[in-house]
Length: 337
Image 1: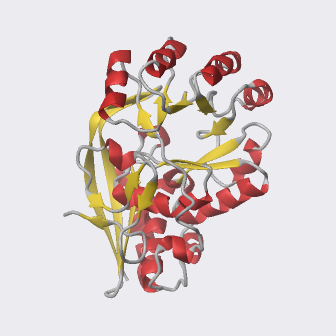
Image 2: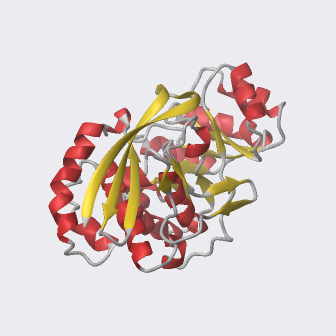
């Protein structure tokens, strides 16, 4: 088995702004596994908020290289466990490796990933399309450029309700809102009543990730469901979120890949919580992996590649009413270069 690392830059169609950062481009790291018969691809983007850089991701993967290439592992879960200590502080790099391992493993079994996981691809919820924070006219323009039945609206300004009210005038599409930790409990509870009237489905991570007391109040009094993102990073967070959120948004890069994500999703389901996977502006490599897990979800945010000016790969095709998987086995993503 040979492990290779590639670095790519993804350029966005529009400046993407959330409550605590803006960007026009996104560095991403691709892991390739090749045993001479089958290859697997995995992806993880960099992220300053979580301390994931190209240098520290590459360093971790270099440490894991002997374990990977010796092939003394039977499946991706075993590889994930054998390399756990190497990536304990760098789940982003672990995700790229784990995703590539699942892609390779499914191909070695001549199955698509969803077939290997015994999931039904007909049961995939519609992805939202994300509208980043901007001036209201530009946010309206973004919606009009990409007409879609479901939008996620990024909030965290001093005029959040005004934004949603103005956007509502220009579309009948359903909304989700994501404040990325920007509100107080009092704001979230008050806003929930107005947002419900504006056909908002749920509020994602309204409070700071450590404000568990505040989230308990929001959970009990909000007129809308609340979904955890920054409060639900790894497996141990799922049970902590129970009773504070109605559901969890799992990010593959944050938790360390497909292997832990599956455990988190099944645990949340057992607790009666809603399940969601979100993306981090990945290319079609990462997005295609998410699509294979989507039958497990109540909600999905896999619009990363749709936000790009230059997708570096081809993979699943996402339409409002269906997801079209490529022919062949594995995740189905291929680099264009």
